[in-house]
Amino acid sequence: MLHAKHTTLVITTLLLLISVTTGQVAAQGDGSGSPPPNPPGGDPPGGAPFGGNNTTTNPVLTSTCGAYLLDSENGDPTTDQTYTSTSADISAICVINGGSLSLVNPTITKSGDTSSDESSSFYGLNAAVLVGPDSTMTISGGSVTTEGDGTNGVFATGSGSSVTLSDLTIYAAGDGAHGVMATLGGSLTLTNVDIVTTASHSGAVATDRGSGTITVTGGTVTAAGQDSPGIYSTGMITVSNATITATGAESAVIEGANSIVLTDTALCSTFEDKWGVMIYQSMSGDAEGTEGVFTMTGGSLTYTSATGPLFFVTNSTGIITLENVEVTAASGTLVEAAATDRWGSSGSNGGTVIFTADKQILTGDLVADSISSISAALQNASSLTGSINSDHTAREVNLTLDETSTWNVTADSYLTCLTNPTGISGDTVTNIVGNGHTVYYDASACPVLGGATYTLVNGGSLQPLD
Image (cartoon, rainbow, N blue to C red; front, top):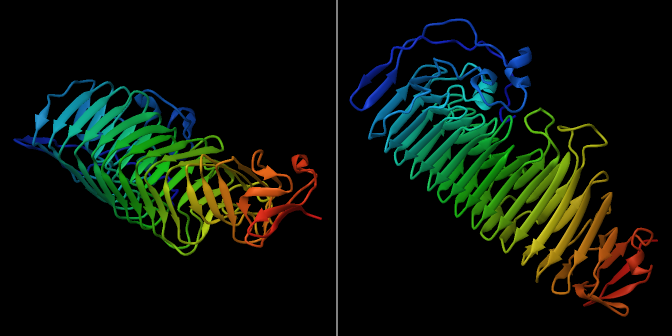
């Protein structure tokens, strides 16, 4: 769940007076009516099932969902039009039931608070632009501006919903006001789109309940509010050649068995006492599974805080792959796998990290608590300068080095096992620089090392733990 609030409120059905003038579509009126139906089975929005490919699974997609509404129709393409909604819960534009719309250089504005945080996050209530199942929309140029709680910028929801955005600017101000969002299998494609979100719980590029797919190429994305990451994935989010910055939260978050794939992108976060990238399972029902996949090739990954790790994995498995990325972890901790008292069941809510570094230069430590584990592999001329499990707290830590990669040890470290098939010559490890430190291993769990003691380059040793 992307919001901190979890109240189920009555969604007021507004009576619309839609006035259409040259270049403007506006919503008016504030009538009231009965609340919309709950999803099948009578569940409230927070308990809605995954999936859905028609409006019956989404209580928002009704005849009152937009000031400008296309229901099962193909709208005429327009240029330089203005679309506005100031009414609570009413989108400026809503396209549903197989509708299709193409806009060039529009000005789209939305204000007014949502009546339900969950319906805004799950179903698109109160978004500026809302596109439902089997419906399509294209926006080229122009702007989307929102102000109010739950005023997401552009929202795609349901199987077959498809939104294509290019050369657009999105500015979203309000609690829970994300820039772009996909749920229930919706899909968005962005090219050279600039996004700014300013308030709490407003991840700029986000998916929520029931997954979604977002593809971003180019553009600059900034999330400035508290608990507002640059990217929040409960689905599949792919980004290339973009700049993404978060100043009030992590730069990227993966919840559940979902993914973020980055190519030649600058990803940065600055908020203190947080994490650069988090992979977790909240158990709220927003995302299924427990294996989050973070893959990054080229570009840069930066966490500027002097506290907190670059990667934090809790109550899940994080599969992390970095290839030729410029990495900065100001705290000195690259990876932390650990339980918290917030997510999961005590004693079984640790983190598992599977970390692969390819053509990487890394500086920082790898740490884990007693119910967490790390498996790290350095390959293709990668190097790590730092310690591994120096506090000797991890349940299990394994390291694999290929013949081209090195570990420069900065403190006594504790491994379960070292796999280094070409780096050991006689009783010397040729690709671990010890600097006088000792690297311990568990002889019973690592028979390949034969319980022997080995000399490290520049002093120090690899030896079994008594």
